Amino acid sequence: MTQQGAALQSYNNELVKCIEDLSLKRDELSKQIRQEEEEKAKLQNDIRVLTDKLSRVNESLARKMASRNEFDRTIAETEAAYMKILESSQTLLNVLRKEAGNLAKATDAKGGGAKEA
Image (tube, rainbow, N blue to C red; front, top):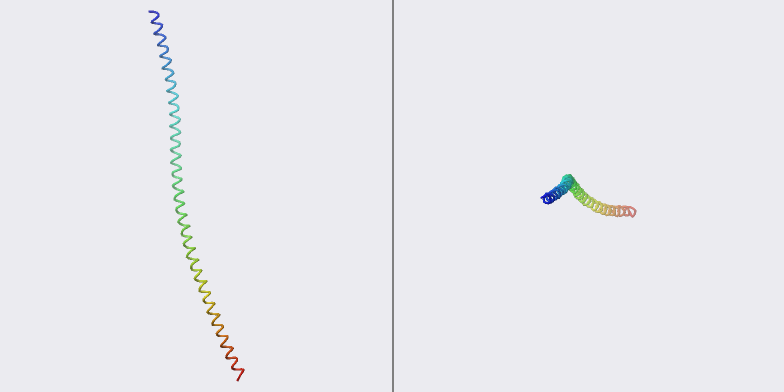
């Protein structure tokens, strides 16, 4: 019976050691789980912060692009109006030169007739 008691004691010791080893592994795993849960929470917070920042940047970009488009439209309209002014100025200059030439001819013709008389 002593032999059976010794065997039982040996099994009991081995069982206790296995349970302790499993408990240590479980505790280590629990520690890793807590660390990863903390990292997950931090990453989720980072994602939320970055998503908010991305949203603000997108809104700012949209406003700035709309303003730039307005500048482009205003510049194009101003350049078109300026080209019309240049064309009108050129036309006016041509008309003025023609009229000045006609007046000069008329003045020369009147002046030439007076010398002949």
